[in-house]
Amino acid sequence: MTEKFVELNMEEGIATVTINRQKSLNALSQEVLEQLGQVIKYVGQDDEVRVVIITGAGSKAFVAGADIGAMVNMTAQEARDYSIFAHKVFESIEQLPKPVIAAVNGYALGGGNELALACDIRVASSTANFGQPEITLGIIPGFGGTQRLSRLVGKGRALELILTGKMIDAKTAEAMGLVNVVVPPEELMNTAKGIAKKIAAFSPLSITFAKEAVNRGLQMTLKLGSKYEIELWTDCFTTEDQDIGMAAFLNKQKPAFKGA
Ligand code: CAA
Image (cartoon, rainbow, N blue to C red; front, side, top):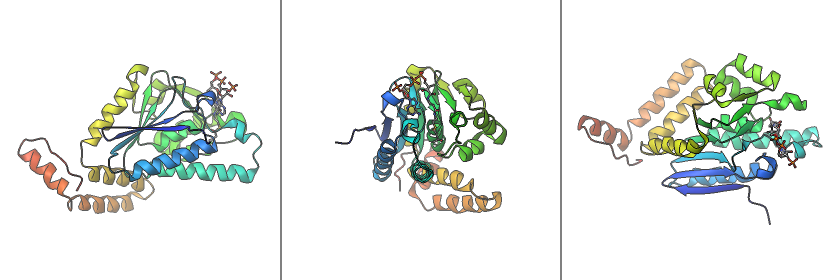
């Protein structure tokens, strides 16, 4: 029987996805990536799920990277396939029409930092550490780090992490914009769930449009991205939730969005 490395817990419209392979600090073996991909597909299709949280099991690691034990004897073709597959899974997170929050509870290194980067918001425990140590292994980041890290924190900061392989603490990661908020370890999950609940109360349609406008817009020129924003903004005005949200404001009431 296949071992279960990815757990799913549903509560009040929030799906918590926990990567649990603690003996290897939750390293992303092919099996872990496959199970993560399946769970992301499932939560994407489940209308009950409004927001997803991804975290790591235990207090030591979020994810300590790709699986070094599995990579040591890989051929170049096998390494390419591994990278292509991980990119596919991480793209499915980035393109999920629901927000994904990374609750980073410990080491987020290599593929672990790259997983956090594929999420929309990163909340970190004060004990978390971040880095792209691939250079120390004679390789480069291969699960999206060269692209997403430089887009998020800028070329200079990204190259500093990628070329030195150094680890940074959560506060340093927050200062460079890699992390949205840092909290004590015991507050991590409640903070992530608090953000998730706040988002879950809004119209899922405008939430999806907002995520798509930012993510797809970043792949475009400013001019094309702006045009794309106009289209999605226009689409908002075809929804009932736009009527509900604006009428509630004018009537000094709390909106009860329908997702329609
Ligand atoms: N892959 C496979 N196994 C890993 C792992 C990884 N990425 N990270 C940790 N482990 C394993 C260790 O081998 C060890 O196993 P054993 O008990 O069987 O020896 C176990 O997890 C615990 O790790 P340590 O004993 O090393 O724990 P530590 O507290 O001394 O150090 C650490 C913690 C600093 C995170 C250290 O484990 C470490 O440096 N890990 C590797 C981090 C790394 O280089 N990540 C990048 C991987 S490459 C990559 O991700 C490529 C890409 O772009 C996709």
